[in-house]
Length: 120
Image (tube, rainbow, N blue to C red; front, side, top):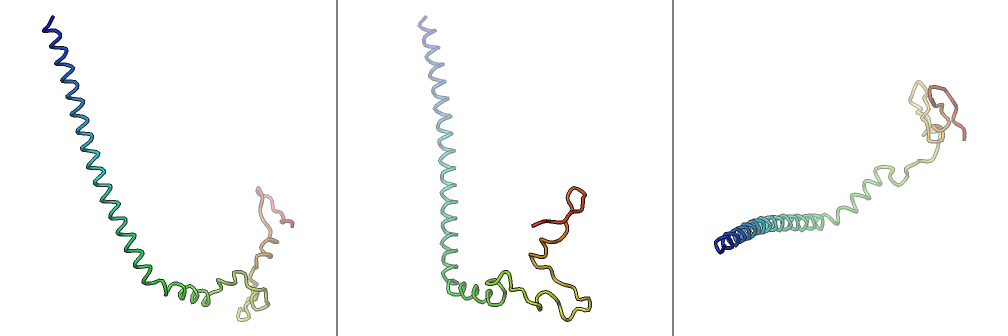
């Protein structure tokens, strides 16, 4: 009977050791993962600092470039005023008219195979 109790105790001790060993392995794996993630965080922080430096170097140029681009295009005026020069091309032999947004709304559309006029 004593031998049986000793065998049970040894089995419990071995099971405890196995669980403890597995726990240590898991802890070591988590420590390695934590270290890897800390390195990734450090690399990302360095990239952010580099980007901030780069942005600071070009900070004065950005507003100027935006202003220059706005002057070179019609960014400030997305819908130019309607004028005879903007609706027809005087150099065109075909006298083709450009469609402005309100004219597009008056065009014909197809609905389920039927031809219909859009109503306002």
